[in-house]
Figure 1 (cartoon, helix red, strand yellow):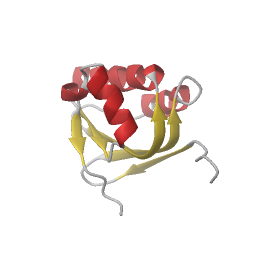
Figure 2 (cartoon, one colour; figure 1 turned 180 degrees about the vertical axis):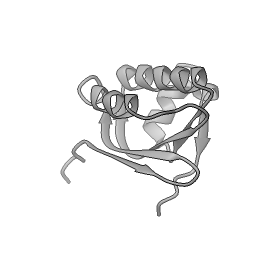
Figure 3 (cartoon, rainbow, N blue to C red; figure 1 turned 30 degrees about the vertical axis):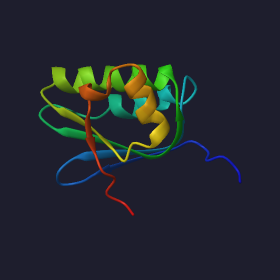
Length: 109
């Protein structure tokens, strides 16, 4: 089985702007996510990161999520993580940061 190549998508929905990520969250892919989210207005809005297709997350991914969370809070918005797989959840648990995020189930089957 071939590894999932990194993919990023953004869709505006009535209740949130959803950024869908597939592949790895690491030092080579996180700048793409940061660049895509930097252009989004978060003031009073919900930004949902659909991570259901993420295969691996390292400390760079965690740092990017924490930075995005802080930005959303500073702009009176919210960051929701949707469909977080086992490995990224383990990173959140090991670092004691899971409780900092709003976790939601994935909306897609």
